[in-house]
Length: 431
Ligand code: NAD
Image (cartoon, rainbow, N blue to C red; front, side, top):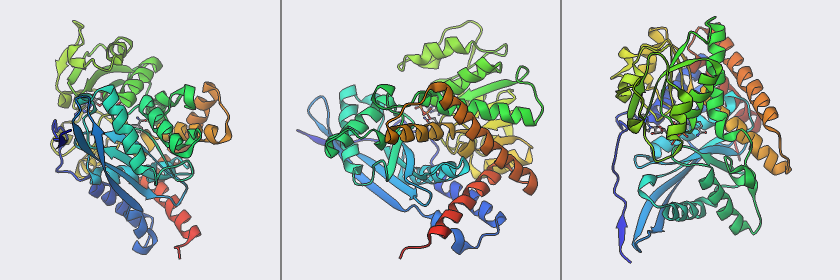
């Protein structure tokens, strides 16, 4: 067997921006506004644990490739760490640390009893066969096994991972334990302990947050146009649910580029087209649509922009060209710190990632609760409770934003940081 090391390619993220620095800048700003001394929140600036693993995988041709993987636990002050697993060729430790910290803040802002974690493997899964992907997932799970568990750290899907992969993680963990442990991972297939409503939950949360902000700004849904960047789990669901609510979705994009139709896209048709995972928007055929770049989608003349792809998409290079009046962040960290300041100055209302895309972790929490109690809830109950939690969180953030005259991003970080610091202080420092 030959051994070679994975080559990193296909970079489309600009690594000039360090997402962990981005997270720290916002956190520090929120801490200052809360009047916290550095000693009150210094521990929140550092992840509790960082694990880096080497994952050897036997490829279908008999060769062995070694992939790099990570699991970061940012904070367990409010409960077990919770956070997705990303497969992406450009991922690095700073990105995973930032994503883990955002999970702590996200769980705190919606007030569910979790801390934050995140995992990733540096891999382009489109280059692997299904069996290679399965072996990679099982070996990665074995390598991070000492850290995960229903009481400790519970992974979930993120970019390029899905319910099937969560099923393999659950099975691998269960084989080590000797019995089925459903609660070790969320976002599983419903047949093996997944929750109804989980696959749509993040996009549903985005749609609910868009409706809430329109209500506050006294704008009707029907006259509101939308552009969505990214047509994966989050973006496609958000586009579909917003379309069903009466929004006019005029532009969407994926990694291959974007499509625009000023009269409004037929989102049912677009989502059906890309439902086959191998299909990209560049191959969508409809005489009414114009093919454009991703940047043209981000900067098009839509009222609401939903970035739902990756980090740092709204950055200094394009922020001045943004025309939307409302941004609902489906992705984690889609806006850089500097670009955010410009959006604020331009008076653009931004519903920040830690609030806007929290629907996924809220229903993951429901899934975990059902798993540990061996219960199943019906979908209506799940969607109703999700809406209750998301709108309550929106109200709290909105109120702080108005009272303190700060952006919703700063307000959300203030609400979240206060909860994390309170939990840390109540527990005290060990020993
Ligand atoms: P996904 O892999 O299902 O979809 C990602 C989409 O983005 C794909 O359509 C892909 O083609 C597109 N894309 C990739 N690079 C792009 C680029 N440069 N320009 C435009 N489009 C591009 O991933 P997902 O689960 O939908 O996650 C998307 C974002 O939402 C990530 O930031 C993730 O962390 C965040 N998020 C996901 C969940 C969840 O439940 N899946 C929850 C909260 C936050």
